[in-house]
Length: 209
Ligand SMILES: Nc1ncnc2c1ncn2[C@@H]1O[C@H](COP(=O)(O)OP(=O)(O)OP(=O)(O)O)[C@@H](O)[C@H]1O
Ligand SMILES: [Mg+2]
Image (tube, rainbow, N blue to C red; front, side, top):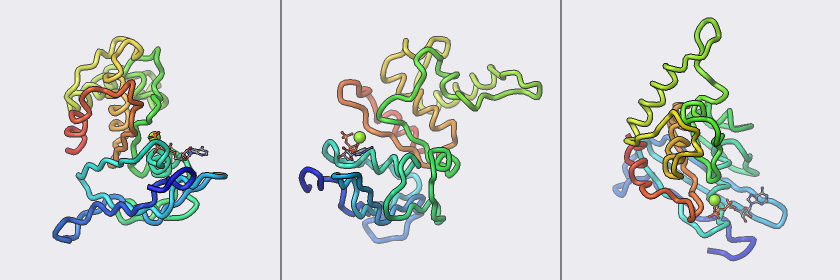
């Protein structure tokens, strides 16, 4: 990989073509994505094809541009060049909410949870379920969260503030939050090494289905 300011991701990442060259059901296509900041070429000419149901790992050294590519995919940054196509439709994400509406969910490298709220409150923060009178439907939200955690195969105590959960459990709350947005493309940004949860394979198995 190139060094210093030019060490950003540059290689084509064409990973959805089957080994036999068969056409696949592409859910996400990134073409020629580039992004620079003053003195830093974070991304250059990135191509990435992802087929429905596939799980991909994006590998690269620190500062290679992995998080930047994912932040572009979920509307936090806009690319200088290139196109994002989801299920055959070109997309321009002005912000994170545009990406969520298009079915992209992200679990950030840095946690975005509120420590003193419980798992259910965190998952539905800002989009709480309410009845016709505007009252919170706590039972409905708890059941929806329980269904998501059952799907992920994890046991989470929803009665305690999430600061009392382990880092691994908090990560699952983040994943649950992304899934509750009905994400069709789920991005898991890497955790810092010191707080990496012990069994990422568990959630990858669940999220692939
Ligand atoms: N807001 C920003 N302004 C300027 N440069 C930035 C900004 N965000 C990221 N960069 C630079 O873009 C490059 C890619 O950073 P990025 O965070 O995507 O790397 P990464 O591959 O996710 O690294 P890590 O493995 O450490 O998480 C780095 O050189 C970084 O310093
Ligand atoms: Mg990163």
